[in-house]
Length: 185
Image 1 (cartoon, helix red, strand yellow):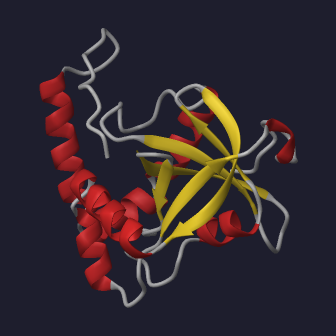
Image 2 (tube, rainbow, N blue to C red):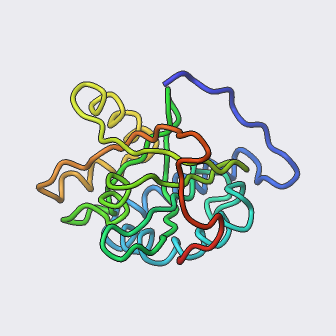
């Protein structure tokens, strides 16, 4: 992943020292079973709300971690679901389907592979198709995700499944059906 230029603190952002301290503490906690439960059950509703009203600009992580809002359509129900997720930006946007180290792939993963998704990030909203990453690309991206959050190694050690990585490929604007903001959360 090309190194991005460091973000400079703005009046709304905590100072870089505080961001680093918050990030390190959150990552240590997230790597535990209790932290994984908290970050998959408690923080998503807050992030879902913040990311939705701010069009992907604000999240509970206060700019410490890159979070986007993924909107999927349930394969069985047809309902729309909004899921806040950690992402990497390399040659595309990538997501990791860790589910906090759960035994099964998260529902958003299955839904994203079956139908186009909507992505809200950094003030932009666009349609995308999700594809599973495999082989050397998976290994390279796995290393990048683990540098971002070392807890992913612990998650992988707890489960028999390979934790998938998903690539989001932007679509033309007319290819994403459904209401713009009428999503169930």
